[in-house]
Image (cartoon, rainbow, N blue to C red):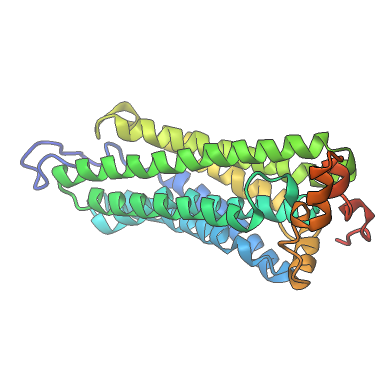
Amino acid sequence: MVEIDTSPDNGRGGWVPYYYSPSLPAAAIFVVLFSVCGIIHVYRLFKYKGWYFIPFIIGVIFQAVGYAGRIGSHYDFNSLTWFIMQSLLILLAPALFAASIYMTLSRIAIALHAENLLIIRARWLTTFFVTGDVLSFLAQSAGGGMMAQGDPAAADRGQKIIMGGLFIQIFFFCGFIIIAGIFHNRLNKSPSHTAESVKGRKYILTMYFANGLILIRSLFRVIEYIMPHDGPLMRNEAYLYIFDALLMFIVVAVYLVVKPYGDLFDEWKRRKDLGDLELTRRDRPQDREAVASGGDIESALSSRSFAEQKPLTR
Protein backbone atom coordinates (compact mmCIF):
# COMPACT_ATOMS: atom_id res chain seq x y z
CA MET A 1 0.00 0.00 0.00
CA VAL A 2 1.41 3.40 -1.02
CA GLU A 3 1.84 5.93 1.79
CA ILE A 4 0.29 9.18 0.56
CA ASP A 5 2.01 12.30 1.88
CA THR A 6 -0.25 15.35 1.64
CA SER A 7 1.81 17.54 3.98
CA PRO A 8 2.87 20.99 2.67
CA ASP A 9 6.52 19.89 2.70
CA ASN A 10 6.03 16.89 0.43
CA GLY A 11 7.91 18.73 -2.32
CA ARG A 12 4.72 19.76 -4.20
CA GLY A 13 3.09 22.06 -1.70
CA GLY A 14 0.79 19.30 -0.45
CA TRP A 15 -0.41 18.32 -3.93
CA VAL A 16 -0.56 14.60 -4.78
CA PRO A 17 -1.64 12.93 -8.04
CA TYR A 18 -4.07 10.56 -6.28
CA TYR A 19 -5.56 10.12 -2.84
CA TYR A 20 -5.55 6.35 -3.32
CA SER A 21 -3.38 3.71 -4.92
CA PRO A 22 -4.74 3.21 -8.48
CA SER A 23 -6.30 -0.21 -8.88
CA LEU A 24 -4.30 -2.55 -11.10
CA PRO A 25 -7.15 -5.04 -11.86
CA ALA A 26 -9.70 -2.32 -12.72
CA ALA A 27 -7.29 -0.49 -15.04
CA ALA A 28 -6.20 -3.73 -16.70
CA ILE A 29 -9.81 -4.78 -17.36
CA PHE A 30 -10.61 -1.53 -19.14
CA VAL A 31 -7.36 -1.58 -21.11
CA VAL A 32 -8.41 -4.98 -22.47
CA LEU A 33 -12.04 -3.94 -23.09
CA PHE A 34 -11.18 -0.74 -24.94
CA SER A 35 -8.37 -2.42 -26.86
CA VAL A 36 -10.58 -5.24 -28.12
CA CYS A 37 -13.35 -2.83 -29.10
CA GLY A 38 -10.81 -0.55 -30.74
CA ILE A 39 -9.42 -3.36 -32.89
CA ILE A 40 -12.92 -4.28 -34.08
CA HIS A 41 -13.74 -0.63 -34.82
CA VAL A 42 -10.53 -0.20 -36.82
CA TYR A 43 -11.30 -3.34 -38.83
CA ARG A 44 -14.80 -2.06 -39.63
CA LEU A 45 -13.49 1.41 -40.41
CA PHE A 46 -11.36 0.08 -43.27
CA LYS A 47 -13.94 -2.50 -44.34
CA TYR A 48 -16.80 0.02 -44.69
CA LYS A 49 -14.68 3.15 -45.26
CA GLY A 50 -16.58 5.10 -42.62
CA TRP A 51 -13.85 7.72 -42.29
CA TYR A 52 -16.01 10.14 -40.33
CA PHE A 53 -15.71 7.73 -37.40
CA ILE A 54 -11.93 8.23 -37.15
CA PRO A 55 -12.24 10.69 -34.21
CA PHE A 56 -14.36 8.12 -32.35
CA ILE A 57 -11.72 5.43 -32.87
CA ILE A 58 -8.95 7.79 -31.74
CA GLY A 59 -11.06 8.32 -28.61
CA VAL A 60 -11.16 4.55 -28.04
CA ILE A 61 -7.36 4.45 -28.36
CA PHE A 62 -7.11 7.35 -25.89
CA GLN A 63 -9.19 5.34 -23.41
CA ALA A 64 -7.06 2.21 -23.74
CA VAL A 65 -3.78 4.12 -23.41
CA GLY A 66 -5.20 6.25 -20.60
CA TYR A 67 -6.06 3.25 -18.47
CA ALA A 68 -2.65 1.79 -19.30
CA GLY A 69 -1.32 4.99 -17.73
CA ARG A 70 -3.21 4.14 -14.56
CA ILE A 71 -1.42 0.79 -14.53
CA GLY A 72 1.83 2.74 -14.71
CA SER A 73 0.66 4.92 -11.81
CA HIS A 74 -0.06 1.79 -9.78
CA TYR A 75 3.60 0.82 -10.01
CA ASP A 76 5.04 4.34 -9.90
CA PHE A 77 2.68 6.44 -7.79
CA ASN A 78 4.61 9.72 -7.94
CA SER A 79 5.38 9.67 -11.66
CA LEU A 80 3.98 12.75 -13.35
CA THR A 81 4.39 11.07 -16.75
CA TRP A 82 1.89 8.31 -15.95
CA PHE A 83 -0.43 10.74 -14.19
CA ILE A 84 -0.46 13.19 -17.12
CA MET A 85 -1.02 10.35 -19.60
CA GLN A 86 -4.04 8.92 -17.86
CA SER A 87 -5.48 12.27 -16.80
CA LEU A 88 -5.44 13.89 -20.23
CA LEU A 89 -6.36 10.89 -22.38
CA ILE A 90 -9.28 9.71 -20.25
CA LEU A 91 -10.53 13.29 -19.91
CA LEU A 92 -10.39 14.07 -23.65
CA ALA A 93 -11.64 10.81 -25.18
CA PRO A 94 -15.39 11.60 -24.90
CA ALA A 95 -14.90 14.84 -26.85
CA LEU A 96 -13.61 12.71 -29.73
CA PHE A 97 -16.59 10.38 -29.40
CA ALA A 98 -18.85 13.42 -29.60
CA ALA A 99 -17.18 14.70 -32.77
CA SER A 100 -18.16 11.56 -34.72
CA ILE A 101 -21.62 11.39 -33.16
CA TYR A 102 -22.24 15.01 -34.23
CA MET A 103 -21.47 13.97 -37.82
CA THR A 104 -24.01 11.15 -37.61
CA LEU A 105 -27.20 13.22 -37.58
CA SER A 106 -26.64 15.00 -40.90
CA ARG A 107 -25.70 11.69 -42.51
CA ILE A 108 -28.87 10.06 -41.22
CA ALA A 109 -30.99 12.94 -42.53
CA ILE A 110 -29.32 12.92 -45.93
CA ALA A 111 -29.47 9.13 -46.26
CA LEU A 112 -33.21 9.27 -45.50
CA HIS A 113 -33.76 12.11 -48.00
CA ALA A 114 -35.14 14.05 -45.04
CA GLU A 115 -32.58 16.83 -44.62
CA ASN A 116 -35.40 19.30 -45.20
CA LEU A 117 -36.66 18.35 -41.73
CA LEU A 118 -33.51 19.64 -40.03
CA ILE A 119 -33.75 23.12 -38.52
CA ILE A 120 -30.11 23.74 -39.52
CA ARG A 121 -28.85 22.96 -43.00
CA ALA A 122 -27.01 19.64 -43.13
CA ARG A 123 -23.98 21.48 -44.50
CA TRP A 124 -23.71 23.64 -41.35
CA LEU A 125 -24.96 21.20 -38.74
CA THR A 126 -21.73 19.21 -38.47
CA THR A 127 -19.55 22.31 -38.78
CA PHE A 128 -21.35 24.09 -35.94
CA PHE A 129 -21.26 21.25 -33.44
CA VAL A 130 -17.79 19.97 -34.28
CA THR A 131 -16.48 23.53 -33.86
CA GLY A 132 -18.00 23.60 -30.38
CA ASP A 133 -16.50 20.21 -29.66
CA VAL A 134 -13.05 21.43 -30.74
CA LEU A 135 -13.36 24.42 -28.39
CA SER A 136 -14.28 22.08 -25.55
CA PHE A 137 -11.39 19.75 -26.44
CA LEU A 138 -8.86 22.59 -26.48
CA ALA A 139 -10.08 24.02 -23.16
CA GLN A 140 -9.95 20.64 -21.47
CA SER A 141 -6.50 19.96 -22.94
CA ALA A 142 -5.16 23.26 -21.62
CA GLY A 143 -6.71 22.73 -18.20
CA GLY A 144 -5.51 19.16 -17.98
CA GLY A 145 -1.98 20.24 -18.86
CA MET A 146 -2.03 22.85 -16.08
CA MET A 147 -3.37 20.35 -13.54
CA ALA A 148 -0.59 17.93 -14.41
CA GLN A 149 2.17 20.40 -13.51
CA GLY A 150 2.14 19.27 -9.90
CA ASP A 151 1.67 22.80 -8.55
CA PRO A 152 -1.39 23.52 -6.33
CA ALA A 153 -2.01 26.99 -7.83
CA ALA A 154 -1.69 25.71 -11.41
CA ALA A 155 -3.92 22.75 -10.56
CA ASP A 156 -6.60 25.11 -9.26
CA ARG A 157 -6.48 27.21 -12.45
CA GLY A 158 -6.49 24.04 -14.52
CA GLN A 159 -9.62 22.78 -12.78
CA LYS A 160 -11.47 26.00 -13.61
CA ILE A 161 -10.42 25.81 -17.29
CA ILE A 162 -11.48 22.16 -17.51
CA MET A 163 -14.84 23.07 -15.99
CA GLY A 164 -15.23 25.74 -18.66
CA GLY A 165 -14.46 23.17 -21.35
CA LEU A 166 -16.95 20.74 -19.84
CA PHE A 167 -19.66 23.41 -19.71
CA ILE A 168 -19.02 24.14 -23.40
CA GLN A 169 -19.36 20.42 -24.10
CA ILE A 170 -22.60 20.16 -22.12
CA PHE A 171 -24.04 23.25 -23.84
CA PHE A 172 -23.41 21.85 -27.31
CA PHE A 173 -24.60 18.39 -26.27
CA CYS A 174 -27.91 19.78 -25.06
CA GLY A 175 -28.31 21.84 -28.23
CA PHE A 176 -27.55 18.81 -30.37
CA ILE A 177 -30.08 16.65 -28.51
CA ILE A 178 -32.75 19.34 -28.99
CA ILE A 179 -32.06 19.61 -32.74
CA ALA A 180 -31.99 15.81 -33.10
CA GLY A 181 -35.26 15.59 -31.16
CA ILE A 182 -36.97 18.15 -33.40
CA PHE A 183 -35.75 16.29 -36.49
CA HIS A 184 -36.94 12.95 -35.09
CA ASN A 185 -40.34 14.39 -34.19
CA ARG A 186 -40.78 15.87 -37.66
CA LEU A 187 -39.69 12.61 -39.25
CA ASN A 188 -42.26 10.64 -37.24
CA LYS A 189 -45.05 13.09 -38.04
CA SER A 190 -44.33 13.39 -41.75
CA PRO A 191 -46.75 11.16 -43.69
CA SER A 192 -44.36 11.13 -46.63
CA HIS A 193 -41.45 9.83 -44.53
CA THR A 194 -43.06 6.81 -42.88
CA ALA A 195 -40.58 4.32 -44.33
CA GLU A 196 -37.67 6.63 -43.53
CA SER A 197 -38.76 6.88 -39.90
CA VAL A 198 -38.63 3.10 -39.56
CA LYS A 199 -35.28 2.79 -41.34
CA GLY A 200 -33.61 5.51 -39.29
CA ARG A 201 -35.06 4.63 -35.90
CA LYS A 202 -32.25 2.45 -34.54
CA TYR A 203 -29.59 4.95 -35.59
CA ILE A 204 -31.40 7.89 -34.01
CA LEU A 205 -32.13 5.99 -30.78
CA THR A 206 -28.50 4.86 -30.60
CA MET A 207 -27.43 8.48 -31.03
CA TYR A 208 -29.72 9.56 -28.17
CA PHE A 209 -28.42 6.77 -25.95
CA ALA A 210 -24.75 7.53 -26.59
CA ASN A 211 -25.28 11.27 -26.14
CA GLY A 212 -27.10 10.66 -22.88
CA LEU A 213 -24.26 8.57 -21.45
CA ILE A 214 -21.61 11.11 -22.47
CA LEU A 215 -23.74 13.88 -20.96
CA ILE A 216 -24.01 11.99 -17.64
CA ARG A 217 -20.25 11.47 -17.67
CA SER A 218 -19.63 15.18 -18.37
CA LEU A 219 -21.93 16.19 -15.51
CA PHE A 220 -20.02 13.81 -13.22
CA ARG A 221 -16.75 15.44 -14.28
CA VAL A 222 -18.14 18.94 -13.64
CA ILE A 223 -19.22 17.92 -10.13
CA GLU A 224 -15.83 16.30 -9.59
CA TYR A 225 -13.99 19.49 -10.52
CA ILE A 226 -16.36 21.77 -8.59
CA MET A 227 -15.38 19.88 -5.46
CA PRO A 228 -11.94 20.41 -3.89
CA HIS A 229 -9.05 18.32 -5.18
CA ASP A 230 -9.29 16.24 -2.02
CA GLY A 231 -13.08 15.90 -2.23
CA PRO A 232 -14.95 12.57 -1.96
CA LEU A 233 -15.07 11.97 -5.72
CA MET A 234 -11.30 12.37 -5.94
CA ARG A 235 -10.68 10.15 -2.94
CA ASN A 236 -12.77 7.19 -4.14
CA GLU A 237 -11.56 5.57 -7.37
CA ALA A 238 -14.82 3.65 -7.79
CA TYR A 239 -16.64 6.78 -8.94
CA LEU A 240 -14.25 7.15 -11.89
CA TYR A 241 -14.92 3.61 -13.07
CA ILE A 242 -18.70 3.79 -12.59
CA PHE A 243 -19.40 7.23 -14.07
CA ASP A 244 -16.61 7.45 -16.62
CA ALA A 245 -14.95 4.17 -17.62
CA LEU A 246 -18.11 2.05 -17.61
CA LEU A 247 -20.32 4.61 -19.35
CA MET A 248 -17.73 5.27 -22.05
CA PHE A 249 -17.22 1.55 -22.61
CA ILE A 250 -20.98 1.16 -23.13
CA VAL A 251 -20.87 3.97 -25.73
CA VAL A 252 -18.01 2.23 -27.55
CA ALA A 253 -19.74 -1.17 -27.37
CA VAL A 254 -23.14 0.07 -28.55
CA TYR A 255 -21.57 1.34 -31.77
CA LEU A 256 -20.27 -2.16 -32.34
CA VAL A 257 -23.82 -3.50 -32.11
CA VAL A 258 -25.36 -0.74 -34.24
CA LYS A 259 -22.58 -0.16 -36.71
CA PRO A 260 -22.36 3.38 -38.07
CA TYR A 261 -21.27 2.16 -41.50
CA GLY A 262 -22.99 0.56 -44.46
CA ASP A 263 -26.77 0.33 -44.51
CA LEU A 264 -28.17 3.88 -44.49
CA PHE A 265 -24.71 5.35 -44.76
CA ASP A 266 -24.22 3.70 -48.16
CA GLU A 267 -27.07 5.90 -49.35
CA TRP A 268 -25.41 8.98 -47.84
CA LYS A 269 -22.22 8.13 -49.74
CA ARG A 270 -24.18 7.55 -52.96
CA ARG A 271 -25.75 11.00 -52.71
CA LYS A 272 -22.40 12.54 -51.86
CA ASP A 273 -20.82 10.97 -54.93
CA LEU A 274 -23.67 12.31 -57.05
CA GLY A 275 -23.20 15.78 -55.64
CA ASP A 276 -26.74 15.60 -54.27
CA LEU A 277 -26.02 16.39 -50.62
CA GLU A 278 -27.33 19.91 -50.70
CA LEU A 279 -30.40 19.23 -52.82
CA THR A 280 -32.52 20.42 -49.94
CA ARG A 281 -35.86 20.26 -51.61
CA ARG A 282 -37.42 23.29 -49.96
CA ASP A 283 -34.91 25.37 -51.95
CA ARG A 284 -36.23 24.28 -55.34
CA PRO A 285 -38.40 26.83 -57.18
CA GLN A 286 -41.38 24.49 -57.48
CA ASP A 287 -41.36 23.84 -53.74
CA ARG A 288 -41.20 27.54 -52.89
CA GLU A 289 -44.16 28.06 -55.22
CA ALA A 290 -46.05 25.26 -53.47
CA VAL A 291 -45.50 26.86 -50.09
CA ALA A 292 -46.34 30.37 -51.37
CA SER A 293 -49.63 29.10 -52.83
CA GLY A 294 -50.59 27.41 -49.57
CA GLY A 295 -49.84 23.94 -50.80
CA ASP A 296 -48.81 20.98 -48.70
CA ILE A 297 -45.16 21.49 -47.87
CA GLU A 298 -44.70 17.83 -46.98
CA SER A 299 -46.00 16.76 -50.35
CA ALA A 300 -43.70 19.20 -52.04
CA LEU A 301 -40.70 18.10 -50.01
CA SER A 302 -41.21 14.41 -50.45
CA SER A 303 -40.99 14.16 -54.21
CA ARG A 304 -37.90 12.06 -53.93
CA SER A 305 -38.59 9.95 -50.88
CA PHE A 306 -36.08 7.40 -49.73
CA ALA A 307 -38.88 4.84 -49.63
CA GLU A 308 -39.02 5.07 -53.41
CA GLN A 309 -35.35 4.27 -53.81
CA LYS A 310 -33.89 0.87 -54.44
CA PRO A 311 -33.66 -1.10 -51.16
CA LEU A 312 -30.29 -0.70 -49.53
CA THR A 313 -27.89 -3.61 -49.31
CA ARG A 314 -25.95 -4.38 -46.19
